[in-house]
Structures are given as structure tokens and as C-alpha cells.
Image 1 (tube, rainbow, N blue to C red):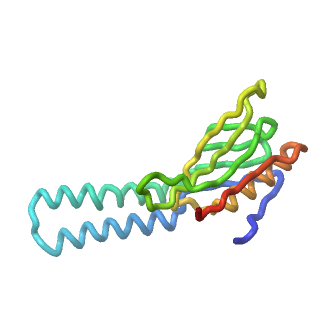
Image 2 (image 1 turned 180 degrees about the vertical axis):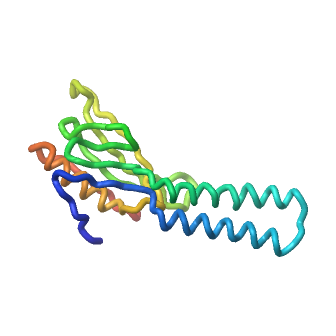
Image 3 (image 1 turned 90 degrees about the vertical axis):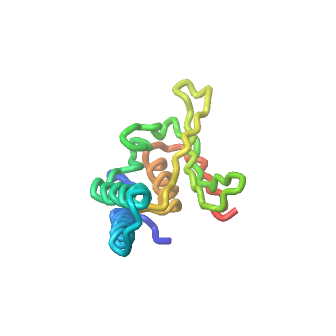
Length: 166
């Protein structure tokens, strides 16, 4: 994994990957149109194909066009969407782990971002899902948190990263 290029006065942005979303959308729409032109299966199959392929394909293409910022990390703090979760003065730790459920065989990676309350009496945890369509890897997100936390405050943070393939 390559080291992300980080600038103390810049930002580390995690976005939806344009190319992956566009590829998913084009494939799903192509499957819909091919299935509709190959045979005449009636209205029930047309409506089912619309719900299974056309609508999700259009959603994936619109996500590719929007290219929204999911996480923003800079020397001010950690943002999820447009909301500041915590500044570095309240940061406790962050870790990535696979949240496994009973009977679940898929990867379900989550970033647990923990931070203090204003009076430092409580520690809050914000669980942020890490999807397969994001343009940055989990390791790069942890490295960016470490870098900007060090740049934003003088106290060394406690960062933990679990084994991703438990």
C-alpha cells in the first residue's frame, strides 16, 4: 500500500469512486436492456427487472456524477459528510475492524472514531461504515488520521488497527 501524500495545511478526502460506481451502473443498465430485448416475458418481469437492475444502475451512475465527499480529515479535525465529529483536542482513538454478524460472510469494515465529550467525562464512539466504492483504503484513512492528529495537537494519539481478516 502506498503512503498517501499528506500536507499539513491540506485535506485528506475520502469520496465515492467515480469509476467503480460508473462501472456498476453501466453493467446493471446493460443487463436490464439486454434482458428486455432478448425475450418478451410480460409486465411482471419488466417491473421486476426495473427494480433489480434499472433503478440501482441509475442510482450508481448518479452517485458517480455527484462524487460526494464521505470523510474529510484536516488539521481542524475529522468530518463525516459535512459535520465535524471532533477536533483533535477531543480525539481519543480510531480503529478499523470487520463487524461480523451471525451468518454474515461479507466484509463489513467499520471505522470506530472515539472522542471525548467537551468536559472529558465521557468517550463517544462514532461508527462509520467503510464501503467498497470508496476511493481510499482503510489503511490510508488511519494514516491520515494519525498525520493530521499529530499536526493538530502536540499529544501523541492512541491509534489502533485490528487485524482486518479475523
